[in-house]
Image (cartoon, rainbow, N blue to C red; front, side, top):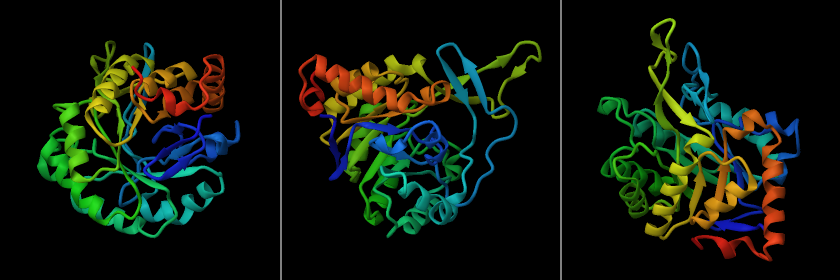
Amino acid sequence: MLKVNINGVDFKNPVIGASGTFGFGAEYNKFYDVGILGGISSKGLTLNQRDGNDGIRVYETPSGMMNSVGLQNPGIDGFIKNELPNMRKLGTNIIANVGGGCIEDYITAIEKLRGTDIDMIELNISCPNVKSGGMAFGIKGNVAYDIVKEIKAMADKPLMVKLSPNAEDIVNMALMCEKAGADSISLINTLKGFAIDPYKRKPIFNNIYAGLSGPAVKPIALRMVHEVAKAVNIPVIGLGGISTGIDAIEFMMAGATAVQIGTINFSNPMAGKEIIAEMEAFCKSQGIKNINEIIGCV
């Protein structure tokens, strides 16, 4: 009933643990068998190990949260050696989320991933381009086109490109990524936000601005998924504020082939299992025999 296919990869259901919120799977496997998920997107991986940002990293907001973790991760080599073997034992699809500070870092990271038994690559183009004044690769369509084209030429697994809602034009960004060879698109990444400590009269985060996620961003994410899905001819994976099975159904009706769940995992570690069950219950109640029937129906 819930099976979907993304770029030739079969998913037992459309629910994927979102990058940066699901660790490498083992953390949530203590609460339920994460093998029931359609897939898991790894923590954002960079070429070299990163310790992440200093100071406050997570801050609660009304209907959501802000984070400035800074892509803390073991690096590509550490992932391949220590994390991937354990992820493979979980019994679900493994998506390697890859970021970088310059195109050379991305290229080297993808080279190292060649030949490994990941199922897909998710290219995080929200990372600041250190060689271009810090503007993220995912802001301007022509910059995104260049990096996606380079990576696609050398990737040996389907390439999903994760879009930033802070892009100048989200639809043009998606079209440029498709033109460059992206096999699928995921969106949205976090929105740029700002928080102040009024008693200290200073920003909450050392990096000043931080990423906003959670239910508060859902209407924006849903709108962007709908716009992009209507414009491209490749699968779209929707994320942004999904907390329930009905939220996930809405994203699929908007055009998403699958969804990723993120912030909800922090407040409800059982969310993945519950969302799958809620989606199944909805389909049964509505006489939907195949979830693919509703993709893009709105």
